[in-house]
Image (cartoon, rainbow, N blue to C red; front, side, top):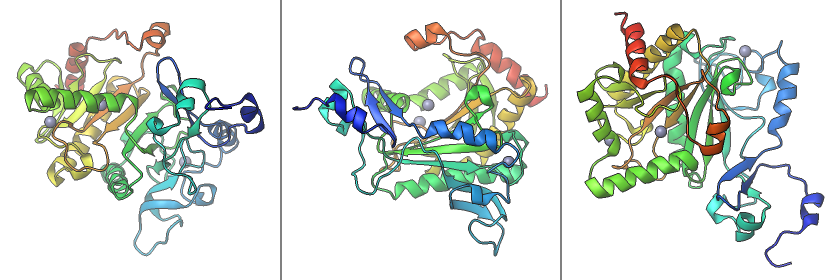
Length: 353
Ligand SMILES: [Zn+2]
Ligand SMILES: [Zn+2]
Ligand SMILES: [Zn+2]
């Protein structure tokens, strides 16, 4: 049969575990994860008994990390932030197989179809024991502990040799992909940075090789000089309306000084980042009446602590418009709100001017 996968292999072995699949024309990878379909049915059954509320710990997998009351024990109900493995993972680490990255997949997977195991870890960060659906309404301390738990999990994965990149993200509102309303964020740990973040890392490296400087540091300096797209700022962090924003009110938060990894940032920057993020999200919440949004944390890849060509940042992506045919066809977004106007409006709301 050579390298070509036989038709009977798919019929005899239907996909159950998450798999990487490659488009042979574009080389773009997808993850096929049939288990994810089950979550919709189970979540609707459990609407009255939320698996993320304190007291319902038995409905989830055991915790892997938590901020909890002194003298409480793992998986009891006295926690403030709780991190668990996702019951319906998009990727999964199998103990019997090496951790594949898509580029290691056999050639036939790339050219003729079939798949190889999509390996990694998929965790949920439950943002508080109460059934609060809004991240911005958490107390300052709880909000801080959520971001602190992101940092702790990033540090944890630096110790895992098979993991090369950790994506932390949040979906707020059904339009942004949230299927459970109890406030939570997620983490997917993979063998290597995929797609968009790989592009950012690559283009940062190209710029650094040409100019011997970080592209984000240069960009930030220009934006601060210009001033028209600054949404808010504090001592060590800045929130900016992205110049080529894909989405209305898309806002990026980044530290003023160069750090490639959130988890290795100085204490002062870390605390300023938390304060500014909560402020900006509150501003968005009030200005746009609790819009659906995604949060995307782009921190540097694992296996290194300091990359001069990459600058960590948080992307806040409100979902006031849906991608249409043109966006799907081309990958290019049409944004009806000029970023300068978005910045001016948000700045006014946040500063109370
Ligand atoms: Zn709940
Ligand atoms: Zn930089
Ligand atoms: Zn980014």
